[in-house]
Image 1 (cartoon, rainbow, N blue to C red):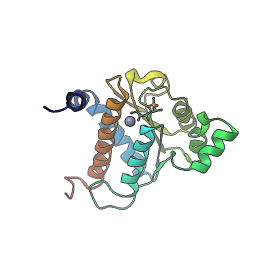
Image 2: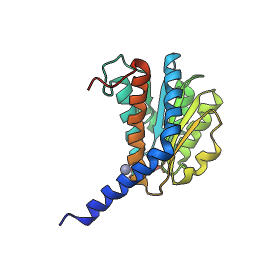
Image 3: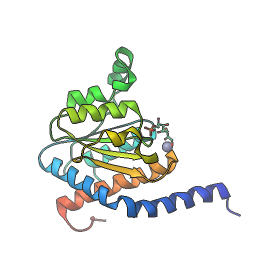
Image 4: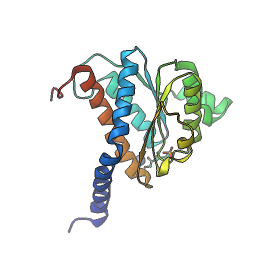
Length: 198
Ligand SMILES: O=C(CO)[C@@H](O)[C@H](O)[C@H](O)[C@H](O)COP(=O)(O)O
Ligand SMILES: [Zn+2]
């Protein structure tokens, strides 16, 4: 007899992925177009989030600077979740809620993209980073869940909101990671066309 708790996680995650494919395919495609345009114009992508979403930011940046499934030149993506000196200095001297927004103010330029990941849509540090991005004419791609939270009220028509239709953080994150892989694949397909080298 298989462990029912383990089976339940897989079942719930698989069902949510199928529902999300229908609901999120269009905004994911819009996000890919936004990213490809920015990268083609010589702009970069900054990424921020907390906890598991910080890991997703680093995962995304690694697949752009390194590679996803195809050999190509490095693409400019930066996770704002890795420099402990910056983060502890800003948290200590100002507030933890500014650790991402100050980095957006330091590194972000018009035309760059902020990938803002928050499963609740309510993490203040991520919301503050969105404000900083919009103030300097960057575009925002937000990955959320739980109805989108406060993030819903931050974005403009020119931004993209990918909101996973679920209330459980772990399930939302599992769809966020699949979304990130769709983005990486979509960027490579736009650059090279066709299928991966695999
Ligand atoms: O990964 C998990 C839960 O699966 C946690 O580490 C989770 O990321 C943290 O609780 C975050 O602080 C949640 O923040 P957010 O996704 O609501 O912005
Ligand atoms: Zn997690």
